[in-house]
Image 1 (tube, helix red, strand yellow):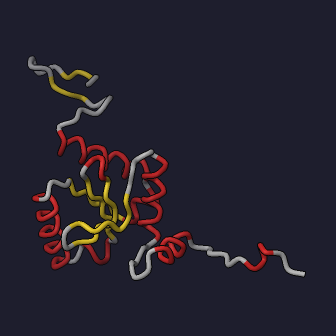
Image 2 (cartoon, one colour; image 1 turned 90 degrees about the vertical axis):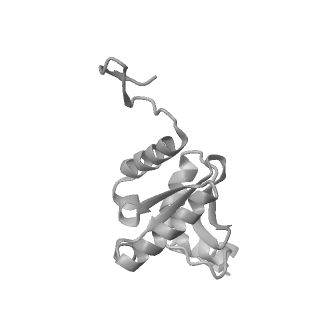
Image 3 (cartoon, one colour; image 1 turned 90 degrees about the horizontal axis):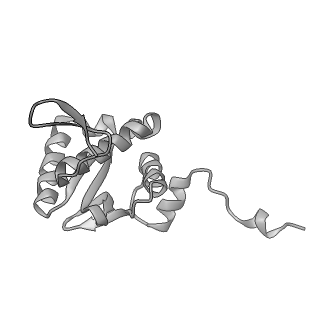
Length: 145
């Protein structure tokens, strides 16, 4: 006699679960990994969020930020770079900070991705990050508080 657990389908790829939950929206493993990272950091995140005429990979509503996970083969093509810049300009005109991370960095360099996201937010919003060097008026560097 089979148990109910044996009858439950098992998805080896968590991205397939997410894609099943949002029909018609392609979700890749890099996006899934970043989604988990953002959740672990305690950030409120909306995946595959509609903004105007675009659907963005991730919306961080509390920071008015958009994060896109870009694959190197596609997003380094000159035509796609132009389209990405145009899209970024439109999203920025709507008041959103746009942040791009490379999909291969999401897997290899979580710390680098985190620092990049924090630095982009800090620069756009005028925040001072703890531990960052700032310049005193005398020109002597000091630690930010």
